[in-house]
Image 1 (tube, rainbow, N blue to C red):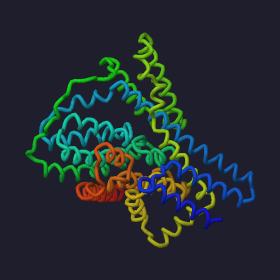
Image 2 (cartoon, helix red, strand yellow):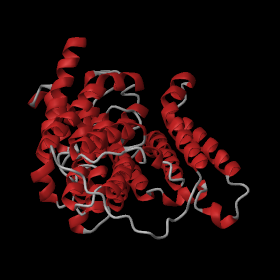
Image 3 (cartoon, helix red, strand yellow):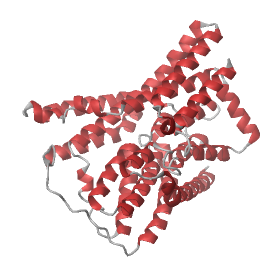
Image 4 (cartoon, helix red, strand yellow):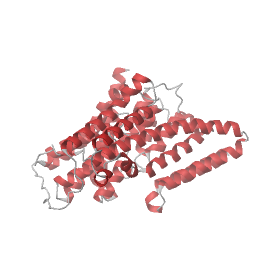
Length: 427
């Protein structure tokens, strides 16, 4: 049974990593993997009650993450429908490329910590299209945006799906992860920024010619500001909600979603149906990436099978015996996240190491959040942010490796070094 489970998981993992070459959506691979693994386990175990109980337990944990992500994605879509992100983008005014890159990098870094790295990447690449006409400039900026988005998501419990998984799973707490990873994450961005802006010194940005045309759906400044700050406030308040009520984060995000829905309906209640339609939360629900949510369900349930059969525990013991150094093991996981999706990697690590042995906010969990979050920047296919940028700006894989990948790798090791030094001094 164990051999069959490992073979099925590895084949499915390969299908997920090779999603684009083989033309099979990774969500289909993840769901098929979950179905096969649980079927093999159920038929081999011979104890239907035990397997059913374990499946129910795994489903509870998976549902909490999926509900949280669904709520967060919907809130972001509502804000975007009201052009709320123009509150930030309209304030960026500079003509020097070097200054603009620092500004874009830091806005992306902090915005990603509040939203998520994928949404932030899409918003910021849309912004640079309005600011830069030369494609070569936009490509370099897009690469830095990927690094900044992944670095910004790593130090926030709601900024990256892997950090969110660790937070909801109880491996990290909001205050500790912010305190522990802010400086290393910042360094992982600043190092690539310093190198890149040095090569851009003295160059001026060329803005594209604005063409008159259909401006699309319009919202008033009051509506834009209200929905932006309300949506942002809800997302920022989730860690405080969890701390005060001790309820799981998904309850806070659903509560906030209800408030945003209520306010939106009140604000637009006097508009005709056509003008109101694209601004409603119902419409926002149709625009969220359901394929991504289905992928998370499939991969988390797949990894749960390996956890219940103690395969991951055995893997952890083998790594400890073979490599020995915990920091080196985690850094290898981080670099691996540049090649394959970091969600199953982190999910596997969560199953490999026991909370009883490695309590919340242990070095292992914090360093894992940093490495898995920032390691995805090393290759363009290593993160959702990178894949989004690849599609939006038509970035070639080998161009990214040549121009951006080595910068991301340098930033990754620099931030890791800062964390190890910081951890050694404080603990």
